[in-house]
Length: 509
Ligand code: ZN
Image (tube, rainbow, N blue to C red; front, top):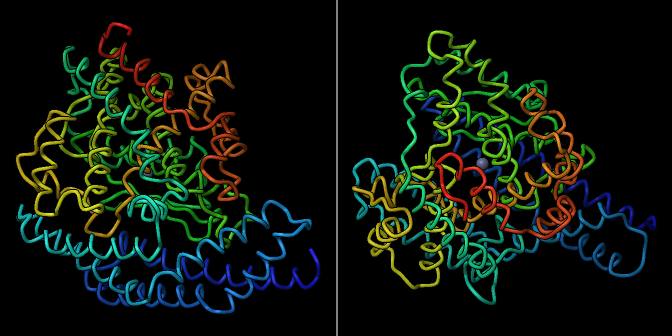
């Protein structure tokens, strides 16, 4: 780098560090709000978070940031010896800058207000099972989101720029191409499962000491390689992962139910998978926009890989079931293993996405994707939403919600302005399956190692092939590098067939 370009680069890096510090401080406030804050702290906290957001936006969109970016982009367009990290850093800063300057400050504020007010209205309306009082707030949110899409710009669908905020570069048409066959294959498999005898889950029901569940979860987190000197687990009503400057302080939360043995554990493993990802970023990327996943799909692939592909698998429980028996000696016996394995893998058409099993989960997501896209493109109206929701639930999953509270109003995403977010959950499942089979191909003794309690080789592989790169590569590039081929959705179908065929005694197809 020429000295003048080096100075320009260093100044932009300084701005990135400041932006990262502001975002990390805001994340601490959010974490505190969910985990620690007394109820009366809410009003002050809303002001603090809004102030930090405004300072962040101002710093990011300052003319000086634009000048530095223009100079660097110019320099990098010519020949010159720039590392892949330097180029990626400038690319990411430019992307964030371009998005931020396209959105007028008034719209930023309107979106923030609509989100915080929308969530309050949604909570009330959901408690009263009253979609009619929620509908105006939702209509307002979608109006603002359409404006946002216009400001950001698009060629095909207003859905594209919104999806792009969560999964850069992905379009609605690409998602549709992946989801159409996934939906049809899943419905076929579900029909075959529904025709088979149902598995019994009474083995994980009952009354399970909450402290013992907690301790068991901590042990599993530790075994996965989670570093308690760089994180901690706390309780919150909705489990989440957050980081205050990754990879140095990445925290998880969970919730534990006395009546269902494994629910809290799988939340812990899920969030642990997210946290291991951020703890694995190359420390040299810290305090820059590259200390992040390329998109939410890759992030979700990590949580799903640990929770489902590993944590709900037979080898994992060959190691952990005896330990769980030791934790609950009066409630579990060695010959319960098979019942237990089946119980944690039961497939059942259900109403609530967050409680859905691995097979039906994507149907919940596809339904939401189709509806939010239709709303944005004006093909359905907000007042028609409950009916459209229930029709698709009946058609895809075979379960029709008796109430809107357990139907169209169940998720916090739309009221809080997260439109275009849902597809990343299922994309994460697809990427997770591809990574899982790549791991199996790499390690012929994959199952044996897991059954012997070894998970270190999995984390080491993920660190080497996925985690350390942060946001240097795009999702597609990272999938290609880690697995040797582009995203291939057939791995997920193969996984479901291989796993659930034996569980439900299905004839091979
Ligand atoms: Zn997740």
